[in-house]
Length: 387
Ligand SMILES: NC(=O)c1ccc[n+]([C@@H]2O[C@H](COP(=O)([O-])OP(=O)(O)OC[C@H]3O[C@@H](n4cnc5c(N)ncnc54)[C@H](O)[C@@H]3O)[C@@H](O)[C@H]2O)c1
Image (cartoon, rainbow, N blue to C red; front, side):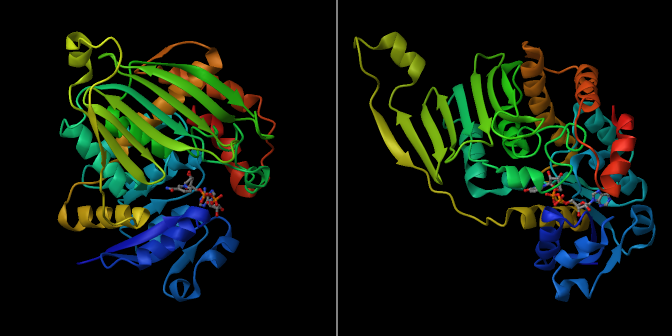
């Protein structure tokens, strides 16, 4: 066997794109898809569709489709139940981000995953494969930056219009989606944050709900984090700014690394910061420094790379780029930011998953969202199971 037979559940924006990505690979073959809405299959290119089987019932799909691995690309609330069902049916899985809506649900998935060590379980954290992100990780891990003192990530270029929010009936409501910018747009940055810097000890911040849009959920966050070793972090995200910014700035003992507009720039101190503070005889002024633009190269087919990696993990036991169990870390970070804003308090990590689930349950109970489709109605009816 030199390729893996893949299926996809959910042929919406992302799932339909995955049909193309799989078709570009030599170690993976798309054999079947599933969506509760048969109109979704019209999104698949005819030349791909004619070679696959389409299902509208997940149980039948998992039982009858000729598949070894499944990509789960449905609204977030469905991720845990479908991932668990797929694993119980003996399928390898790639779960779209976020792993789940809240930490307790992610724990349930990971506990089930532990019962199936023979199955590869991955998250779609495609941005981990981007060459610039890999280079930043390499610079941190090699000690090139020295101890990190401050991390600032301003990620406000996730602009979304009201039309976007109105485009899917599950979107941007507590009942249908379970969160806003932290849960839909930022899971990539939250994952990269924990992947590069680890999790902080405390989180506090201000979170605004429906500030720019007619939505229930958060569309702006301003968060401050502290690490046990003194490193601090600021995370600012919004879907209401135009034009927005995506700037990661890492201030460390050996200099300052910034990534913005595709440019990775390192301003390297000749003398490390703490040493300079202690030893310089200057009243004002800083150490001499060099300005270096760091080159990075590589393949930018992010989603395709994750699917290829999972197929290789299945075929050759190569390590996963984004194991599913790691998905809980960025989710916990996002949940703790929302909890800090909701309760106006400092949240200490590890966060209390029960407390968060109870808060979310209250928000779901007050949600003005009325389920419009059969799928989401079924989901809304079942929602209580997820707390
Ligand atoms: N990795 C990325 O870059 C990326 C980008 C976009 C979306 N996503 C993720 O993909 C997921 C889907 O987002 P989307 O934008 O494609 O949503 P979407 O609304 O466009 O599509 C969802 C599809 O799932 C189907 N569906 C809903 N419930 C189902 C069920 N129980 N069983 C089978 N099918 C079901 C719907 O009919 C729809 O066709 C989300 O979790 C989102 O966060 C990831």
